[in-house]
Image (tube, rainbow, N blue to C red; front, side, top):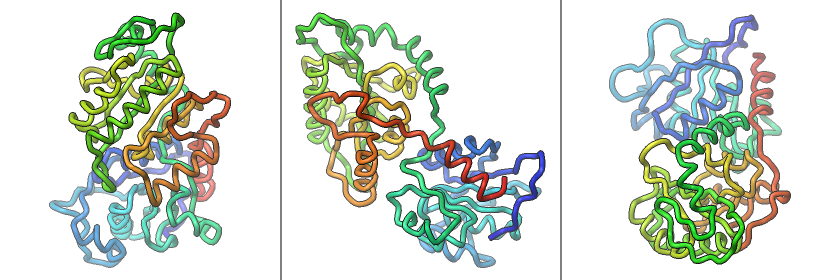
Length: 354
């Protein structure tokens, strides 16, 4: 390990070393923000050798990146934060280049010996979490790290209400339809609730087809009708256009609205305006962020999950943070809010002597 940071009034300097992957960089930013750090973002694309054999990055003259050096001139930082296994070798290499000045924080299981890092922050469903009792430099999280808190959601909710409130109001009125909504076939007379639907899509494990989204749509339709609710549906970058066609075809007769990717993204503000949230099971990040609200969080599968992702959802459900998507809307009292960033930041400060 590198030497301890000298405690002083000046906060430690910090680099986030990232290849620009949004989900990974978001977690690094979240950790730095929770710890009160102001990081510099270093975009570094590990070369093939560094990705395939990250353990070799500790040795001198081992090539780390593609193209010219992305590292700024001058002093190396007190802290380096990396996220994801493919960046582990890059982090080790940059720390090596610092000649021991920088301490390395790795988010996610690097599948390397824990004592090669100054601190590991790993979710409980990662194999490295099993070594936490023997290795004091491991902090365990339940879900993905995120920057959301109640104040951020409230502020974003105001912006989302200003941008889309009139359109969503049509989903809440019997007989109403909002922009992009299906025909309302309901007969209830009270105001409907809103349910947010956060969609993932293609990932490294599987590529869902239109039929998978159509099946999810039928589940959403049943839930919406039984709960007297309208659906605010927010696709992600991984949700294909064909998938939305399959989903929309199953929502005939159900008030619903699709964000078309134009204008202000209603997420995360929508989390502060709805009665419940549905997320697709492919995204640990979305489920982790939605669980912060304490709202009913329902997980719908596009394809059956296995391995680490299935383990994550099992842990979330066992702790009362989420439940499988079903035909009925559970009571909000049955759900437990997940807010672990203050604890993780406190543990980081304690273990690194910040």
